[in-house]
Amino acid sequence: MGTYAAEIAVPPPADAGERPADAADQPDEQHADGAEQPAIALGAAVPAAGLSADGPSPNEIRVPVLKNLDRAITGLITAVPPLLLVLAGSQLWNRELHWRDVLIFALLYVPTGLGVTVGLHRLLTHRSFKTYAWLRGLLAVLGTMAVEGPVISWVADHRKHHAYSDRFGDPHSPHVDHGGGWRGALRGLAHAHVGWLFDHSQRGARERFAPDLLADPVVAFVDRTFLLWSLLGLAIPFGLGVLIGGTIGAGLDALLWGGVVRIFVLHHVTYSINSLCHFFGRRRFATSDHSRNLLWLAPLSFGEAWHNNHHAFPTSAFHGMGPAEVDPSGIVIATLERVGLVWDVQRIGAERQAAKAL
Image (cartoon, rainbow, N blue to C red; front, top):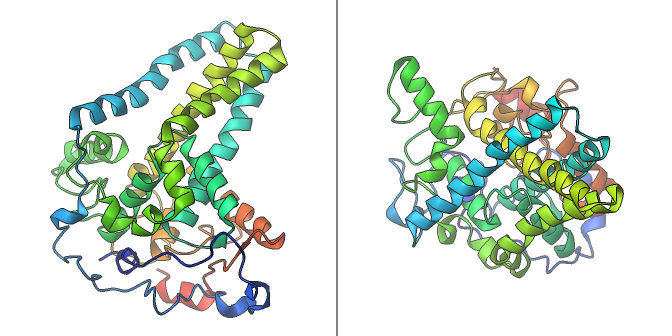
């Protein structure tokens, strides 16, 4: 059983969007070693109530009401960016790519990527730190602008992944029911990368895996307005292109690079965590799954590719756990902590790391 299993049925911490009056007075070592509150019971090695050790029950699986429509929308979001990438390639070939397009790509890639890693993943999925309601909402919006699905569905799928990591019930394992040999390996990698998006047999039920977020009015609003934030993520680069370049054509070029190409790159970086980081790389800590650290993917993923570290200590706010393991998301969280915007930041002490080290 994955270490996140015991967390999924726990109600959200009460913060009402404001920092508790005594938060600044709490000793730093309270969470310095990543120790969890007893009521949350994180890190349990036994199934939580309602979770079977043999696999998920029907109430843990989300089945879309309109499967074909869901697949069509998923196919559109997945297929259009690589098709338009051909147009981007032609601009490169003909030397029509402008520096403003590269700048706008970066200006959108960094905040929306951090919205996924710091917001959707480390904050909303694993609650590795606490923050104000307005910042929680902003991070959820930025993550939604990556167009990886509604925020609560994203979290539910990821929590289910941790509950059943690399065994029956994992939505996107490359190692379950794909056959042996190199063909089975390729089938598994294809499933973990994009195939699982069209397979509704093991998607996480929102009511089971994310009841805390369904009850959070800020996150629930962002979830309901997924289309709005996705379109805003396309409108911003177009507007920047018109503003900087002075023409509609410049806006369309910026929309291509800061919108479509940016979404394509973010998607496949995220997908690579699901696929490549459960297949290639090194294992630093003992875990019950196949998670691995993949050095070259770490910068593009803002530190998410230290994936074995993450599976060993899911609630840690920092995935890079050594001087050579650069973790931009962790740096952002530490910076926010220093200026007082986040608190109760989960850290893993040297003793706990040594206990799991290989």
